[in-house]
Image 1 (cartoon, rainbow, N blue to C red):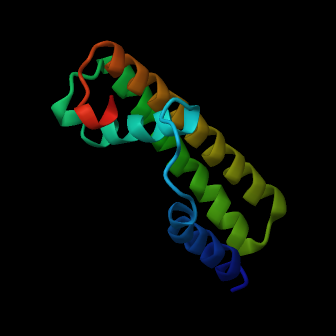
Image 2: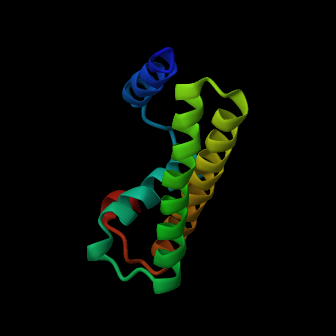
Length: 119
């Protein structure tokens, strides 16, 4: 039952994190571009996103979910290495996904296919 503590802290951080920070001064940094790319990805039906981009992005999302399995099992069984392995897989795939969102934002901005609020 002790796995509930780190799981609860993770969920709490997921809720609190976006509320802790002010809006960025500039949208020209990696993190801001990644968030803007995620907004484009979320509304992908309105954009002409290349197929290869979509395939890799879906693969990264699936691998993140697969990484959650050993992570959660490791938390449940209090197995440090299982937890760290699952965390590493999920985190690295999430970081790669986020980097892909930066690429998406840059590509869409170059093609001038994004809404005014992103320009």
